[in-house]
Length: 244
Image 1 (cartoon, rainbow, N blue to C red):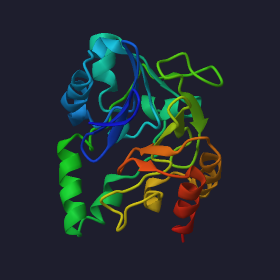
Image 2 (tube, rainbow, N blue to C red; image 1 turned 90 degrees about the vertical axis):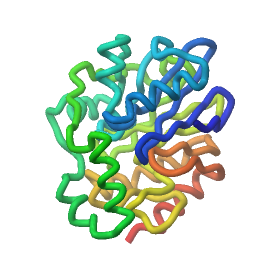
Image 3 (cartoon, rainbow, N blue to C red; image 1 turned 45 degrees about the vertical axis):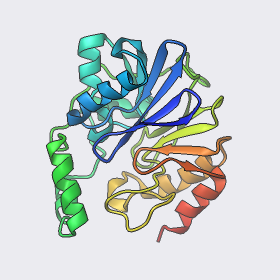
Image 4 (cartoon, rainbow, N blue to C red; image 1 turned 60 degrees about the horizontal axis):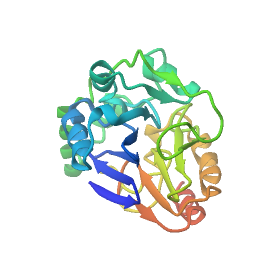
């Protein structure tokens, strides 16, 4: 668990991050790890002195298995809603599938680091994608009425409804997989996009970098990799330069 700003915390599960935003005794959770990360996610809430009942909603950056794993547990046990962009709801409910396949990963698993990662995410439930029947679209524009006042920023490309969440009071943006700072399939750290086969629409993902770079924030908390502090426009430009 890493406190990255006042009342903003980044926790790491199985090579994936989630974010907790605190306001008084209430929390917003951004993303929810793999299915096998449920206990680690609950422990991260306890680490900052809270209970799962304090989570007012989970904001989903995108509905891949490594970001939605605890949603059904939280909803079934605590009634926690899962909110996301309207274009992402079909990915969560299983009506649409905009994700890399098992074959995409297996064909690259000859590298030792990738093989270790593949085995770890398999144990964490990567092959059993949850159907999130209770997924809802947030309907308001601008700041959501949730702890931290998160502002959704639609960044299509990784998936159709991929969304970052800007926390204006903290100068933080949770980018999900629209911008990451590391991954076992990447040879380098720092701001970048995931390998192309992970993206549903690579040209759109490239275009979304420009929108991301215009945000007023100086701390990126990505879905994968370490938090990164600096000029957000420079981070977006660095990621764009690395593209073929």
